[in-house]
Image (cartoon, rainbow, N blue to C red; front, side, top):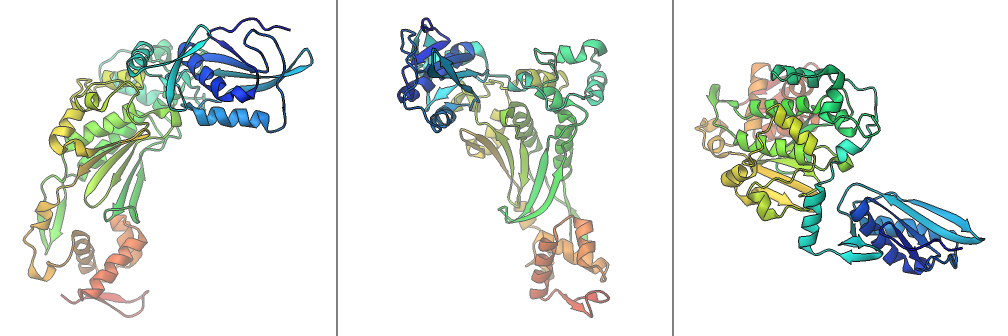
Length: 432
C-alpha cells in the first residue's frame, strides 16, 4: 500500500533510526500549521515497509525523544497501526504555543522540507503569529464559574457591560464555547494561589509569615497585594518608648510596576502564579516563563512590550490597572539599575532593595544600641505585659514560634530579660 506523498503536514520515515529527524519535522510542522503527522515504517515515496525491530521499548523511546526534544513540551498521540499486515508507528501532534524548538533550534516547514530559521526569520514568525495566548485556548478545569467581582469592576469604572455577551466580549470562552483558563483566573472563585511570603534574615531559612491573596478574581488578588505592600512601606517603630515614623522602605511605584508586569506577562502555561518574597534587605517579585521569544533584553529594558497574554493585558488596561505606555521597566531601571533584574529562560526576578539606612542611623538609647528592630519590638511587648507567653507574641506579631524563640534567646543572652517561675504561671523580668 502507498500512503501518497509527503506534504507540509505529513512526513514519512523508514524507521525510528530516523527518530531525531522525525522530531525536527514535527516541530517544523507545528510552527507552520499548528499540527503535523510523522509515520515511521514508510519510505519517503509513501510505500509502506513497516517498522523493523519493533519491541515494547520502541514506542516509549519515541515518546521520550519527543518530550526531550520539543519545547514547549507537547503531548502527541502515538499509535501503532497495521497497514497491509505491516506495523507502522503514527505520531500526531497539535499545538498552538508557537514557536516550538527541536533540540534547541527552530524550524519551519516548506512543502516536504524542514528549514532551520535564522534569528531574523524566527522573530518574523513570532511577530506574524503573535505570542501564543495560552490562557484563552486552554479549557478551564471548572466550568461553573461566575463573574460578579469582574462585572463590578467594570461598572465601577463606568464601563457599560452586556450581561448576555459579557463572557464572549471579554474573550472568556474557547472556540468550543467553554470557559477558558483566563475565565478561571478572573472568576469569583478559583484555585489560583497568589502568595506574599516574609522571611527572617536574607534567605529562606526561617519563614515568618505567608499570606495567600488568591482564590478569587485575579484583579482583586493583585490589588490586595498592592494594598498590603503599600501598608508596610510606612512603618512606625517603637524605640525606647518613643514612636518614630520611618521614611519609605522602598519605591512603591517601582514595586507596583514590577508586580503588575509579573501578573500580566507571566507565562501561565505552567499555571504558576507570580509570588512576592520579602527579606530583611530586599523584596523579590518572581514571575514564570522568562522573556517572550521575540523580545531582546535591550528591548525589554527600553520598555518595548511583547505581551504573552494579550486579552488579559487588555482587561487590565480597560480597568486602569496598567496604562500600557511601557514606562514601568525603564522606571525600575532608573531607580535601581539593570541589576534589579534576573532574567533566565524560565524566570524573571525583580529585586527591590529595602532602604535600611535610616533605621540603622536612628538615635537609639544607649541601653538599646545592640538590638535590632525585631528584638526591640519583642522587648517592648514583653515590657507592656510581663506575663506574655510565646503564643501571645505569635498572635500579635504573626511571627512563627521558631522565630519568636530565637528572639527571646537573643534577649536573654544579651541580659535584657529573665523569666521568673514556671513556664505556665511565671513572668518576665526586665533587666535593662
